[in-house]
Length: 253
Length: 340
Image (cartoon, rainbow over all chains, first blue to last red; front, top):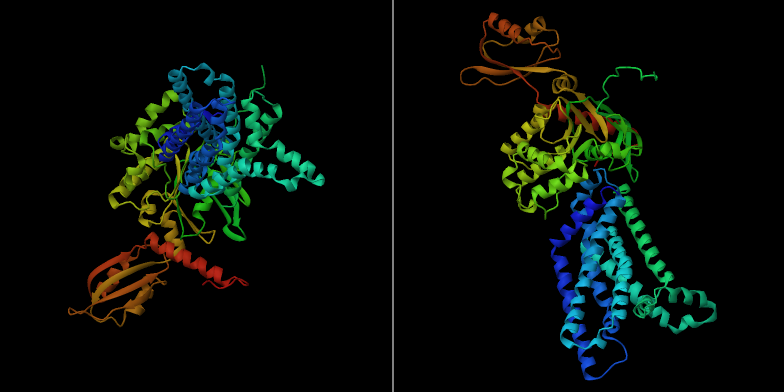
């Protein structure tokens, strides 16, 4: 992993000069801004049971589905389309270093976007002056959930990018995969046909993989090792598949 | 005293050694049993029509593609089992010279230098050196995507020589350049002679002829000819030609030719022009220059001679002849479908 930092810093720079990063940032902040504003309006009308933070993070999947593809679709697809992967892999770097560097850069940017939304809470605290609106527990839990689940989501994006040499195709594959992982699993978990006795193990597996369930646990302050393991193992698997995909495409190019 | 390693002066290892290299893609033989060797410090040209397997061979040499069978080693390190050692010893510029469009020239070189493990402290000075060498100082802060083709090509070359590798492999470094830029690139490559081993492929034959010490011609994945340009001319064409413009009674010429050189024969004869001069073409199998003897014989026959030239076959002729020869060999192979 000698070259990991070189590639990481290079990739962060490349992301910072790429227009799609800024599209993602603007779309993310304006969307989450509107969501936050809506929440505040509700809270100003009548008192609510839950803290605004836990409602705010409930909408995490909307930015994830468009932001992760925008951040990652370019990383390996563009490299192969331009042919720069050839110059990259003929230096003493390994495919794993290249994939990890690109993944790390996308993850850093992903987290920077999310952490910038902490400004909303700061503004609320500064102007509302109402301490009970700002409950640090759900906020920290929410950000922890974002950080942990982001590992897996960004890895899915990197994997999608390794599949195609066309950025748009890679982006769409990524969005579809994320949709399946977040909303598809949720839909399955609510489907009544899974309640049958014979399908009980499947039901259990689906419940284990419910991202919304994980979100709820995190914001309540429950950090379950099984849930951490779900994201970490998913991340490792997606990255291994990305590395294999890049290498397989070389063998069959 | 501990046993000292015996002092044996091994002959310097060849920079590139390829033996029985085969690469097939989905049943198609891209490279078919190629063997060659390049000593250190030599500039070698790789010629061949499109799809001959040049780029594939180069990619295998760099360790980017795995070979189907055969052995390749760079500076004594086998590519298959020690790709990292090989990658530290090569500078490679792929076909079409892919570069990231968003970076500045100096940034790109810095990034590549770090990847090639040049120590941070030396990198700045080394970048200045290659920028100077490739005449890129003026554009060092420009964005690569906005550079003209000639500059981009030179950025690619600067990148290849950046880490001072012993072996440099360049796939068509002069493609798409204007004659002036070709000249610059050619000088640049020539300036590496002796210090680095350079393998370049090109379609531009005079280019190869001028820069390269040795030429390899491949077609259909096989080596069809190799040697110095002069050797190749002799080997492939096997003859030299003379062209004489003479006037007078030429009927006795065919008989006289035998007395000059038994292999000499009349190839063609044109109609006389208004002054009575005909252009006669003679062919011989011998490599010696028999121009003087021809001239003397013609004059002693009382013929008037206006000019005598010895035709120099260019590498182009050699290339065409060698590739044609290999097409014929392929066509004669039994059980092979005829070429479309």
